Image (tube, rainbow, N blue to C red):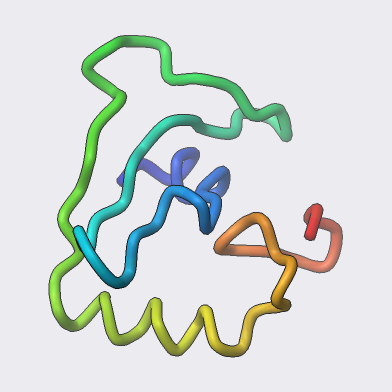
Length: 77
């Protein structure tokens, strides 16, 4: 994933149970989230086993109502 896509990644686009994939549907540039520039940037990425375990643990310690996967002190929750 591109860094701007990771910044905008939301839990609703991460499937940790059935398909085990991340759907890339948006990015964040200069604090503004929006759709990718090109149609080919919309894609699904398989989650490999090592990352799957890390994301599952991260989800467990994330706030239950967290929208974004990666949140900072000033990020929307």
